[in-house]
Image (cartoon, rainbow, N blue to C red; front, side, top):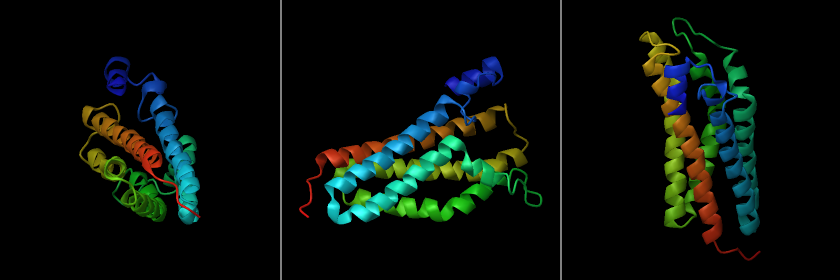
Length: 191
C-alpha cells in the first residue's frame, strides 16, 4: 500500500517506501527475514547435532541470499546481460538463471527441513517456499509487461512490484516462522 501511495501521490519520490528500490524499508525487511531464517537454521543444527552439517550448509546458503538482498549482488549479475536479442529487460531473467543452482539447492534443503517438522511448522515453511517461488516467477515474467508496453510508474508494472516484493517478504517471514516454530516444538537429538 505504501508503495502504491508513493507511485500515485508522490511519483516514486520516496525511495524508502519504493518497493522497487534496493534501499527501501522493504528491501531491508526482506533481508532481515532471510537472515532470520539462516540464524534459525543454525539454531536447529545445534538442537539436531546428527544433521548439523547439512543444516549449517543450508544456513550459509540462506545467509548468502540475505547478503545478496542487502548489497544487490544479483543486480550486478543482471547488469552483465541486460538484453538478449529482442528481449529487453533480459536481466530479470538472467540473474535467476545464474542463481538457479543456489535457489534450487536451497529450496530442496528447506523442503527437506519442512518434512522433518511437525505439521503446523511444516505448513508455514512450505507456504513460505511457495511464495518465494511465486516471487521469482513474477520477476522472470516481468519482461512480458515491458513487451506489452508497461513501464515504471504504470499500474501494471507497479502492481507486479508489489506482488513480487510482497511474496518475497511474506515468503521469508513464513519460512522463518516455520523454522522458529519447528525449533520450539522439536525435541533435542541425543548425540
